[in-house]
Length: 316
Image (cartoon, rainbow, N blue to C red; front, side):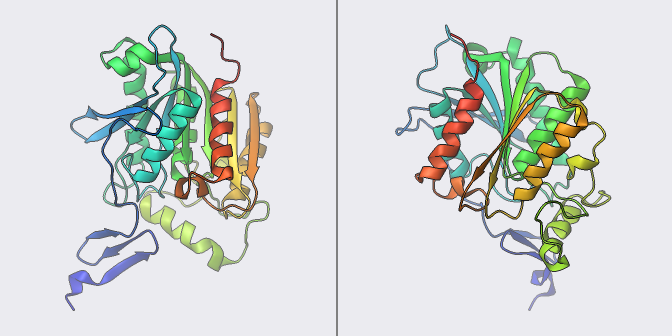
């Protein structure tokens, strides 16, 4: 066997790295083009926002969009451990078509560069570039945003690693207060957070914690470990400055990461942040269940609750 094809790092079932440096992704490789979705009437298109980095976004506009009635704007970050999946993955494309239609919102889905070829914090920097690009479109030239989006009602959201990104982008909004939009709230679905010490009902046995710890350090080689503020909001002294006033957290009963979602609520409430945070738990479900089968009642309920959060207090 060619030694270059021997497995050097194995992160089954997500990916593995060969001795020759090749990254083999074992999931999340399928893509679908942007299009008009016949089921929802939602239109989508891809837009390059940085020619040097290759970062792009996929925009979604619902069928009912009307320039006379501007719609909430959602910036969405996909999950996949910072390693697998893209904004063009079928599961995310389907989910955001459904969400844009249910909530009647404009969506910007960020296609950031992935580890390990582009180690963290590159995904954070790409995501911040996307946030700044969206803010610039409040007086910019992208017609779908300029015509249909209400930049006073902006939300960040994501699932798993994407929820981690949404939180960290909201922290940065609080620090830098960029012009061009108002961040009203964030939605964190099955957040990919962790820490050195177990919280809540997390397993304490090393064998149940080692995969997440190894994955984080491998994808973020400059990190001090899982108590890095990027990964553990409880270790971030900036948490009280989270740049929004409403947070919705989804957890799934059978998800190993459930306890981190509950802990996030505790951390926010005791930080002095002063906003409103809510947790919704889905019984009998596991991590990102809604992406695998969007037709279940639990998946539909998650989308409806998500949509209701973005439309809370909406007038007109």
